[in-house]
Image 1 (tube, helix red, strand yellow):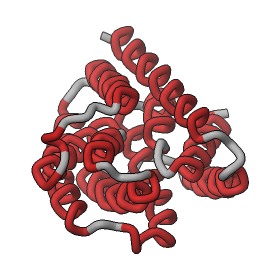
Image 2 (tube, rainbow, N blue to C red):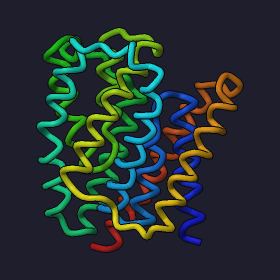
Image 3 (cartoon, rainbow, N blue to C red):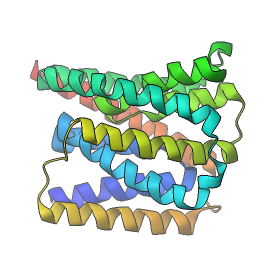
Image 4 (cartoon, rainbow, N blue to C red):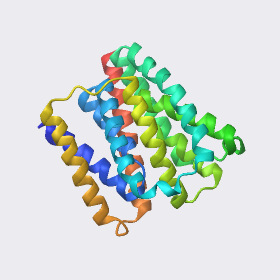
Length: 238
């Protein structure tokens, strides 16, 4: 039963990623934390999101903007160890509360799409990248700071997606390197791999047929529910 639930989480998140170019971690991380625990859940979200971003970058690497992304990913790489260290030092109930709250905060930031002149340019890339690296290593949700940076830099979705995928590859590889691989059985790894493939196929088949706005709303709703449940589970364990 556990592998069936695991497959469902990863497949749905993978499908969402292929439909919208982002959203894997927001959908998967809270559910994986509830299923596997905060540490292994975040690590698996990092591993899977990195694989999905790498697959997407294969066809979109020409759209990456090095001038903007080098300071962004450099700042993220610097703060990943801080996020990993923080997550490793907190008791599990406290960690669940903190991670769930970070997920809810991430949803709020994406929903409001804050426009701040200071988030544009190199300074904005450093601030957003630093926040993204910490959040990715600690809670598996490093995408919202990237989204805010893209909004304030005035990027279209076509410009945003390849840069977000590049960032996703780098920050997730570093996040896993700063921690460890999630403790899964060989069978579970096969399940995850198969679910990622199924999610990609379904997402590719549905691309252009499903309203992006509706998928976006579903992603944020699932993330908010998952974050709230994670907070609740953590509070129950205190």
